[in-house]
Image (cartoon, rainbow, N blue to C red; front, side, top):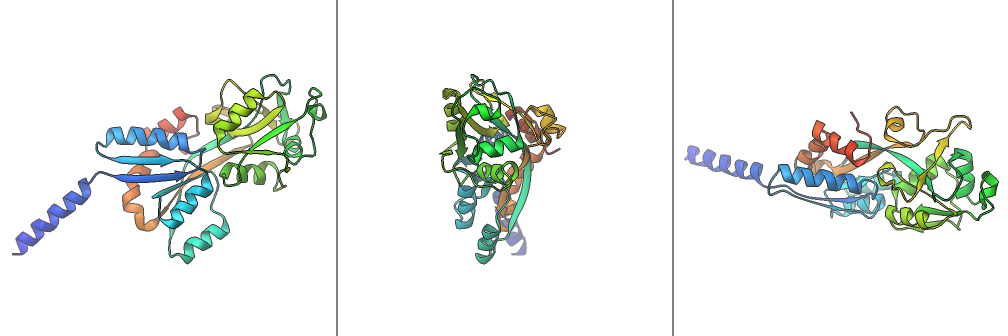
Length: 272
């Protein structure tokens, strides 16, 4: 009887082990193209697995993790204190994993003669102190600033690290997705915005940036890797620890040599 019981348990364990993976990943638009490529490669190598990746912003992903509608939250910022408290109150312990790094590029229309700005000049533009390009050495032309909407982790990171926690001007136009910023800046001569390195297109010009007012550095893979470009940030996955056995195969895949190779191909900086 015991042999029959053990055999039954063994078969059940094998079935559980061999069951195809079903995962939902939600959140950051910055992390979205990376997670999509990783999911495509993972599913190709693991037949029958299904990984669904949905954007919407870091805040959207973290809210989904709280209400249990996603297995993994993608985020381009760390958890906020109030989010940590809500997760604790709901009895959820969460694990944080850095999957890649991203250089945040400040972009303008290719018709703009400005090719570089200091951090302080960027701050003054997005807070509304500067409203005309001639105030930073450019043409007599109105500045039209584009930002991500408030649920975006990129919005939060830019405010904290580039604008030194100053408030955005109410005249800054908030866009629902990074692609919309690329399109708007590419079509508007006086426009400025910011996007992740992987989103850079020929329709826009990425500015060199200086934090000391002397050395201006271009946002590219080499400068992000050697940390000479000053606006580099980690990209995160968050998941409930009780789901670790479920999500671990996919997370381990991203952190593997193959997964980190995809990180660089997509335009992000590997963690190792």
